[in-house]
Length: 230
Image (cartoon, rainbow, N blue to C red):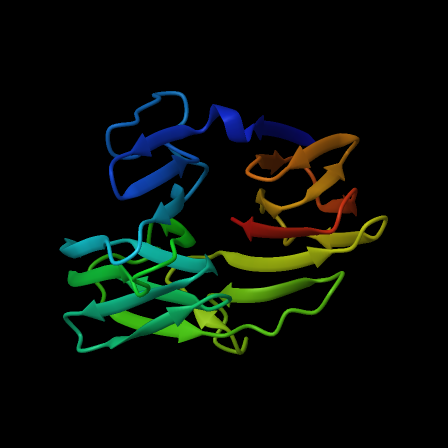
């Protein structure tokens, strides 16, 4: 097993009057030529947006965009006619395909909204744009699949050969995961602290894990994690 650790303190940062963003990879004005992607994963942003503020209507094309709301709620509107609120614990998937316009604003006038936004390269380009929103059922001490490209999985569908899992790990509990053949993992710690292969990861840390078929995730504290199999 090979593990490349990116500590929370080393993430790229964007800070303006209404937005605090931490970047897992080069994004916007933050550029690190040695950290531009992990396989098809090209953006991993940890965003905090002020009340009533957000991203006005803008366009994307040929990107799979995943938004996971951790605290608060987001107001969404797009050129496909979708309008709605994404609440804490909900997940949004936009397949931008040949082109889509959308806006995302903090739905609250009082509290900040905290969310992860993740971009992947699509498997097939210039497809018809599409949108999904999903409330996952999260069971404790297991990895819960939330995104897949397998139509048989009752989760969000993505235009890329990738699976996403959310996990809640209790203190002193262990989650084991067997990878599909020729797959690698991106692991992000949303909250708490875990260990893997005698390496400790805490909130905001991430790991790029290669050259293995199985991992064991051990809870040091009660923790929430996101695992992306690529």
